[in-house]
Amino acid sequence: MAANLRNQNQLLSKMAIGDGHGENSPYFDGWKAYDEYPYHPIDRPDGVIQMGLAENQLCFDLIQDWLMKNPKASICTPDGVLNFKDTAIFQDYHGLPEFRAAMAKFMGKVRGDRVKFDPDRIVMSGGATGAQETIAFCLANPGDAFLVPTPYYPGFDRDLTWRTGVQLVPVVCASSNNFKITKSALEDAYREAQEKNIRVNGLLITNPSNPLGTILDRQTLKGIVSFINEKNIHLVCDEIYAATVFTNQHNFVSVSEVIEEDTECNRNLVHIVYSLSKDMGLPGFRVGIIYSYNDAVVNCARKMSSFGLVSSQTQHLIAAMLSDDEFVDRFIAKSKERLDKRHKDFTEGLKQVEIDCLNGNAGLFVWMDLHKLLKDQSFEAEMELWKVIINKIKLNVSPGSSFHCSEPGWFRVCIANMDDSTMEVALSRIRDFMHQNKDQNTEVKMPARKLCRQSSLKLSLSRGKVEDFMSQNNMSPRTPIPHSPLVRART
Image (cartoon, rainbow, N blue to C red):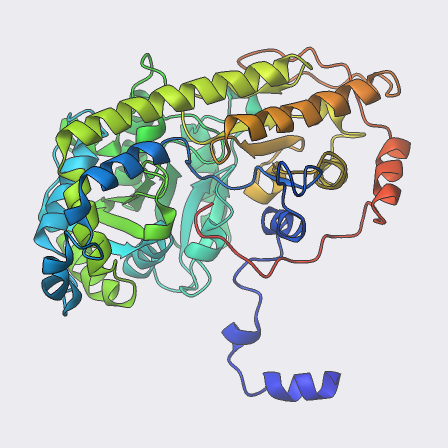
């Protein structure tokens, strides 16, 4: 059997038999436990609750209501079928003009209309996953590298490197200053890459951040723009969470605003990746956007988009929806309001059992700090705790190590992909777990982290308790969960 498999593999490419897709990560492993036994309030009340999916399901009612009132927007309804032929036949890979115009207008609106976007620079792609890969192909050769501040979205290891041969060089950011990107950290990473003879072609940032749920302030963005101009490298800004900033006192600042103000900036170095997966909660529509200030990149990316176009049917519907100013304004306002409430409800629930989170104001998740629950400050201990959370508490959360976090004990918890009752069940499980073990666990003194809110947690999982939980689930603390065959895009 093994010999036959080897013979078969000899007929395949290195990519086909390789591991470049990155499924061997706890980030994806958590899906296996959820897929095998997902939570259902009636059929599987003890099932695993999905908290590893960064999906915005809080405003589907608004979209459904709009669709009911605008049946002509879809070519698959009796009201819209007259547009079926014109939409279904071949469309140029530039995209429908009305689609590009609507996307440009929407991108400006979610940025407070403080900057305008040119529809002729809108390049469509099959989701932000395809957009990131296209940008990598346009900006770098195999072996070249992008700097990426940590912690960062695990899918970048797949999106930017798997088929392009590009490398990612981490820029280490620390909890001591709430994981902010500093000039010294950028310089250190750039210098270390040079010492290893790695050519750095660009810097990739996410703003708002996945997984931190924070935004970059104007001064930090100015420093980043200054850095890439000084080094003459590209800047790729992933802004797919731009409309998820839910507190009024901290407005989102796009890199597009910063370069409008900076007359010395070389705009040819600046590129934005956007999509409707997070801001509108439409990941299944696969609407990704590349917006580049570089004419050559726009031309190349548009040609490459032939391999991952957005369907004409989707373009037609999205163009109609995003052209409705009244709907868009209401959707953005309601989404922020509901995200704010969900974030407050969940973090307040955690605080009841003395669990702290990084003080975030954007995104569809919280960056939860459980480092005081670790038996020691190691990534091995983080993995042991993660397996307890998956198999005992039955919550699929993502360990910080899968986001390349430099410090153990952090976990990303997605909070917008479920209804209120499911969130309450998740909180109840966390509370029960903490209460049941509070008296059994011994207090350990760990170096305090400087957070926006200082944690007062005094609990620690002992080695024995971890092994007890593992034995109940027929697992060893060192036994990995089988790799999931399912890989979700941009989660």
